[in-house]
Structure formats: C-alpha cells, structure tokens
Image (cartoon, rainbow, N blue to C red; front, side, top):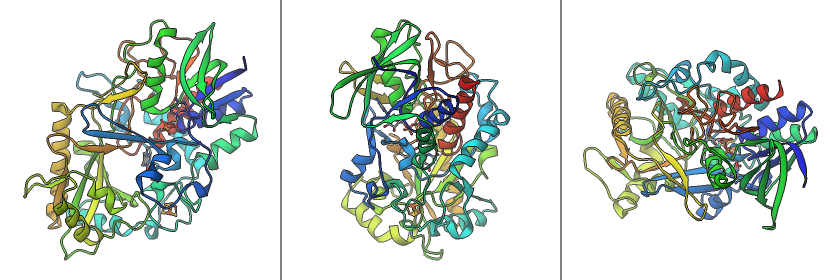
Amino acid sequence: MEGFDVVIVGSGFGGSIPALRLTQAGRKVLVLEQGPRTTPASFPQDWSFRAQARLFTTYTSKDYHVILRYGRGLGGGSLTYAAAMLRAPSEVFEYKDGNDYRVWPAGVTRAVMDPFYAKVEETMTVERATWSDVPRCGGVFGMMLDKMGKTADRTMYPIHDCRQCGFCMCGCPFGKKQHLGHNYIPQAEALGAEFRTECKVDHVEKDGDGWIVRYADVHGHARAVHGDKLILAAGALETPAVLLRSKAWMTDLHPQVGRNLNNNGDVAFLFRVPPTMPKTYPYMGRNNAGIITYAFWAEHRITIHPGAGPPALVAAMDVYSEQDGPKVPLGVAFKHFVRDQYAQHLLPALAIGLVDGEGTVTVNDAGLLEFDLPLTDRLKAYIDRVAGVGRSIAEASGAELLRTGGDTFEHGDAHPLGTCRIGDDDGRAPCDMNGALRGQTNLYVTDGASVPGGTGVNPSLTIGANAERIAAFLTA
Ligand SMILES: Cc1cc2nc3c(=O)[nH]c(=O)nc-3n(C[C@H](O)[C@H](O)[C@H](O)COP(=O)(O)OP(=O)(O)OC[C@H]3O[C@@H](n4cnc5c(N)ncnc54)[C@H](O)[C@@H]3O)c2cc1C
Ligand code: SF4
C-alpha cells in the first residue's frame, strides 16, 4: 500500500495550511479532496441552483429549519467565501458556556494566536478595504449606525483591484479574490506535496501507530493509502462524519465527536430603509459589504455586517415584519415585495455572536450525514437579543427591522464549528489543545471542527490561524 508521512483529508483552511507547513518541514504529504480543481472559468456569474450545486454541498437539519452549506473543491470554502478575514476579538478566547466551562483551552489566547493570524494574513495578502471598496449598502449601513452615534470599521479581505461585480460567493471569475489555490496550495505543491482531487474519503482504520485511509477515487474505485499521521480537515460537518463512520475500526471514539455544533451565532435579517435615505443597491459590490460594527460587542458580544447578493436569495428567506405578523415564505406578495423594495430600500445584514454549541452531527445507518441545530431556550433568548439590537439600529434611522424565522429559526448558515473541539477538559472536548484526538494515536483535527466555539466574526481567519498553530506544534 502507498505510504505517506502525513495524510490530510480536506483541502480547505484546516487542510491546506498544515499541508504547506509539514511539506516545508520535509514530510511526505498527501491531501485527499472530494471536490475538483478549479480555474477562473469554473466560476460563472450564475446564482442558479445547478451552478451552486457544483460549488457547494448543502445539508438540511433533521427538522428542516436550518440549512448548512460549505464550499467544495481544491481550496474548500476559500473558493466561494465572501472573503471577510478578521481576527476574533480577545474575549472570544475567554468565553464560558452556560455550564461555566471555558471553551477555548487556557493556553490559547488572542496573544498566543496573534503570530499565527499574522502568518495567514501575510500568506493570503489580507488588507483593509478602502472606502472606495465599500459597496453602496455598506455605506448606507454606516449612515444608519452614525445616526445612533455608533461606529463601524472597514473590513479586512484578501481581495485586490476588485471589480465590484457582486459574485464573490460564486467564486471570483477575475481572480481578484485570493483563495487557497493562489497561495498555500501551489506553494505546497512546488515543494512536493500531492493534492488528489475528486477523492472522497469514506472512513479510516487504525493500522499500528498509523492509519489506513479508505476513499473512492475520481472513477469511483475503492482505494487506500497509509499515513503515519492522519489529519482530518474535512470541515465541521464532514470531519465528525468520517470519524463516526470509522467507529468500528477505532476503539474508544470520544463520545463528544459530532456534538457541540455551533453556528457561530449567525442571525440574518433585513432592514427596510426609508425613501429619505440613499438607495441601497444591495445586489452591487462585493458580497461581504465592506464594513462591520463592533459597537454592540461590549454589551452583547455580537458584531453586525451588511451583506449583498442576488434578490433571489432574499426572496427565498422566511422574512416577516414585526408590525404585520408572519408572511408566507415564497408567497407571491413577498416576491412582489422583494421585487419592489430590494434594489432600493432593503439592506441584508448578518449578526455573528457568542453562543453555546448545542447542535449535533450524526451519521445514519447508511453512513450519511445528518445534523440538528435545535432552537433551545438559550438560543432563542440570544436571537431575541440580536433582534433588539437590530430594532434599535432601525429605529434610529426610521427604518424597519424584518426578521427571519421567529419561533422556528428558519435559517441558512455557512459557519459551522466545534464538532471535534479542542479544549482542556478530557470529558467535554474530543481534542486536546494541539488538535490531537483523545484516545487515539497520531490523529489530529485542524479545521473548523476543532475551533471550539463562536469566533464573534466570520471564522475563516481563526480556522486558518488555529491550523497554523497546530501545524507549528506538529513540525516542532
Ligand atoms: C457562501 C459562503 C460564504 C462564506 N463567507 C465567508 C467569509 O466572508 N469569511 C469567512 O471567514 N468565512 C466565510 N465562510 C465560511 C468559510 O468558508 C468556512 O468557515 C471555512 O472554509 C471552513 O474551513 P475548513 O477548513 O473548516 O473547511 P472547508 O473550507 O469547508 O474545507 C473542507 C474540505 O474538505 C472536503 N471534504 C469534505 N468531506 C470530504 C471527504 N469525505 N473526503 C475528502 N474531502 C472532503 C470539502 O470538499 C472541502 O473542500 C463562508 C462560507 C460560505 C459557504
Ligand atoms: S466583487 Fe470583486 S472579489 Fe467579488 S467576484 Fe467580483 S471582482 Fe471578484
């Protein structure tokens, strides 16, 4: 059987970053990625379900209320993310959950993470947007905050010379948005790392001190490779699924694998801004609309940023006005409302904040992934708190807050975390602070699954920095 020093499953932030660092340290590295290689031509400006299905894998929760999706391809989520790359505020690393448990290990603070954040920022060329990079709806959101005496910061991105075409989440066809295929992956390949695409890992088997990785290749043929070390970086949904499918070949799989699923406290909503304010044009400009406010962080531990995208995405939301009561999703009246209001008076926004990870990833008898993200009392209280902040922003501008979901938390999400979390408590955290899966030998988790809680901002930079940190440990 073919053998490698290190086999890595998944080529997103959690996979490609250790691939480069371990190859630089002289290890023979193989990365198995289920998605294809892409070129700029792989990213048509097309929001159709058919085009989106090529770029993303989507799952619906068991109760059908929440949709989670992730980018699939060489480079993982970096291909189709909106590319906001922000350091998590210091308090994130001190967060204690409802059981008074500090979710990040005591040894991983913002000060410890800072050099690793800097490494990712340098490698991916992250820089602050200029004011002329901020799309129109970002500017209008800034005006709304100004009216209530609050401030916003311009966001950090690895985007240069942007054409503001507004299709970042379809992948950038102009190559202006840096993804891992522009930096970590070619650097690792130049040094000898091998990235095998369209290779889907089914499960892993213990083999002495190492691991046999079983996968289906591009032709669907069953293949196996041996790794002295195994790194799982298939994302917060798929990493626990690979482990749960491997239970029969692993004694004592940690019982918390797949638990603590955290959606990063994401809550989406809309503002209907009054005609007296400038038009929002939210379909224009980069999809993460240029600014973010930390003005509510101290009191509520949430950040809010405006987003931009196609009207169809908004028309598919289950949005209701607090004044009028629930509206029927996708109903004709709501479609007309989006048609009449979207281009000029609607402003989409996303709050991100610190919540407990109360969801679960499981696999069914056929080995297929399922997940639950229940609307617990704690999560509902958090969503109501976010709505209160949204309402205060709206009221200061004579705008109206349009909420999504309500009692059922209808929600499409893209920031799953925590399902194989690192942590100090052997019983609560499957992985130790260096990503080693407790109870196993030479098996590490380095992706969003290992990030133990919400990041307060979009998570990719923290996932990347955490992967740099664990890679530094592995190469030391
Ligand atoms: C539409 C969208 C917009 C986003 N915008 C932002 C943003 O602006 N800023 C931000 O910080 N974050 C953003 N995110 C989130 C960000 O993309 C993710 O947090 C990040 O990519 C997760 O990194 P990861 O390494 O954990 O996993 P991923 O990047 O998801 O990588 C996992 C890889 O593993 C592969 N894989 C999975 N299962 C298998 C298997 N069995 N065998 C082989 N390979 C497998 C997948 O195909 C994938 O390529 C966005 C996400 C989406 C969906
Ligand atoms: S808005 Fe900018 S980064 Fe986004 S797809 Fe267009 S050119 Fe690329």
